[in-house]
Amino acid sequence: MEWLTQPWPWYVAGPLIGLMVPMMLFIGNRSFGISNNLRHLCAITQPPKVDVNFFHYNWKEHTWSLIFVIGTGIGGYLAGVVFANPLPVELSLATQDMLTSWGFTQPGHNLVPEELFHTSVHNFTFLFACGVLVGFGTRYAGGCTSGHAITGLSTLQLPSLYAVLGIFGGGLFASWVLVPRMLQ
Amino acid sequence: MTRYLPYLLTGVVFGFILIKAEAASWYRIQEMFHFQSFHMFGILFSAIATGLVSIQIVKRLHGKTALDGQAIAIPEKTPGTKSYVFGGLIFGFGWGLIGLCPGPIFALVGTGSLGALVVLAGALHGTWLYGALKQHVPH
Image (tube, one colour):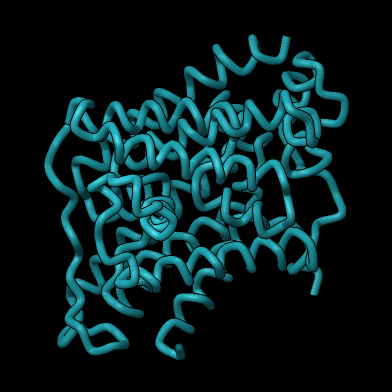
């Protein structure tokens, strides 16, 4: 049962993620994508006084999608808590050096660095602000890594290629320019 | 409720993979954007390749119907450029900074990470903000 606690190599995880696309079609003719759920959650919680048209639709038709991400959370719990990997993330040496030079004391010790995720007003303000970028950007682009990079590219859709180029451009800028400055 | 069971189970598998693949790791995302390991690229490329091949097979199946009896059809994305590029850039800034895209956010929330829950709260506000400003941004 070691495979349950050990991290999975890319050639196992990648194809399994790719199979989500035909799987969702097979289950109920659905398009695989995660970020739409953020919209559904807004539609559910929008107070009657706040009247944003974008969230006026019958979210109940998308219950399947909300159930899917509830499952994603349960899967996260199983993989990250019940069958947690006791060892650090096996990062490349170049990454370990880079992270050490950025001031991280235990690179890869958990999935996410304590320095950025532990409870503090400073950290949570930053996490919230980054979340706003993710939420705004994914809805503006109409999808995220799953909907555009995986579903969109594997069904050969040009708009998804534009989105992926944007996503990668933004990510490169953030991790080369913003992250090192933010940590100094 | 049983008609939702396949979605729940597939979702569980998806969340499990994301954590086991360390795709929900801030460290792995920095490593990817700095081109220091093939790991994340391997995941993305092999996922796309698997999707591509399986979609071609699905397209050629006769009497292709989903479990619930509907005909299988692959939905087309609305044509356009600006919204995809600009939206992608903004999302990319967030992904590069915090190392979490929406799938991993939900998976990491499941591990009990309070920080991931704060990211989710931010993402909901960002989504709402887009809904409110939709008419005022270029598409």
